[in-house]
Length: 487
View 1: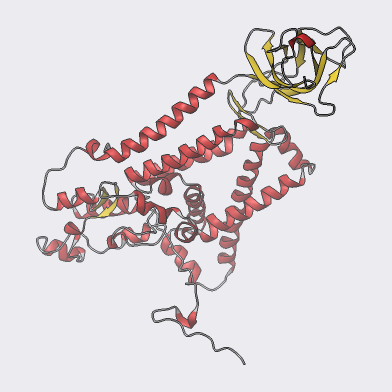
View 2 (view 1 turned 180 degrees about the horizontal axis):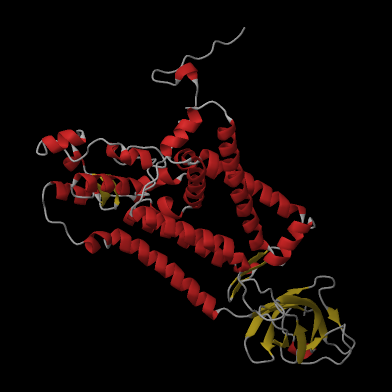
């Protein structure tokens, strides 16, 4: 028996569809201080992204000279003079925590400024829309082209637009892989067709995602895919600066003629829809704070332009807090801006963010550039020598975190008369052994520790390997177990 399709709920979409069809948005070109700020941030962020892999940093002949490099093959992360090893990944975790708290700090202070200015989705979408506007024209022209039947002119413009988008997306994916290998070498390999398959695959995936997210999906990513609009409600309060429509000043709305004829009884808003037409997410800010608003403030520029033409005060739509908006509507004196910003919640976030950053810097500045690791070999656990000495074997790893070859003086402590033996090197047991270590690497040695029977006081004891840099720049210790026969 065939099941009967469910009827759509009251108020549901036609046909019972679970998803609303996307309504195309045609943002209009706008000029103003916030638009100029967005252009400046766009150019700076894109320049950082595309240029950084090509910057050089001299680390000597034994390390790569790329300023920023995530060397997965050798498990290293280079950032200027800083080199992060796998066991130091907590620095990366610390930076991610700082980024999260920094996002809380910015949102609490000035709303979704990150979303409106510096988020990669916003930056690339802005770039794609600029290309679209350059090829197809401004809002009205793009709407006319989309409604018109297919023609040679329309085909050329659409093809040019999407080809430009794909080129930008390809350059975006290509720039990303340069962070994971020497950029000039990888570029030569990519052009010559000899690069690893994973490089081409990564570029392909990032080309597709950049083209899809910034070119086709745009505001849907911010509205439906990104979790931050839902999280921000917990970050904002009545003292957070957000883009706000001052309804006490703008209502009741009327046309420009009505406003000029009766300025006392008609609000400043002339219902020109300029704020709606420039919004990249297509919302009407006059309806109050909304999940879709990314706080780009383009509506402020558009509204200020209209107010200038009407000879009315600016900032009918402006950056303000809910509390200050209420105070302004009552004609009350507003407290200084810095007092509104530097409130306890903001200072707490800043203190936590700063403490983590300073703590990481302190640990980074005081970290040792060498280490020693040792583990006891279990087969056999010990050997009784002909002269009565007890011998244990160990696998010792000497870690050199500097980009130059070094020599470590290795000795043992904790048991009187303990001596080192290297089976791979002829010679008598020695109290100290000088061992070479390659630059920026780990060298492994299989060593033996011999202890005279007079020093044996228990079945299980401890011995400490002490590695001292021959140049006097650092030392490291590792304590391990020493096993002897039961007494």
